[in-house]
Length: 58
View (spheres, rainbow, N blue to C red):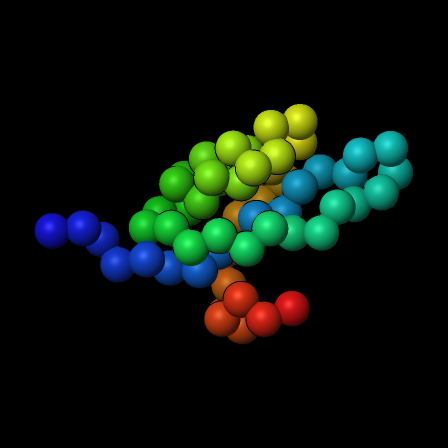
């Protein structure tokens, strides 16, 4: 049986002095959320991963 999916907000490090907007990802684990965010933005570095308590709303 698969693990339940949880919404995560993945934050990236600043690029050229600007902090990019966080990416909303639904995944089973924080590590899976990080992997998905890096798949979407391979040129960025993950700063932190937080469980999204807003349900994906900005």
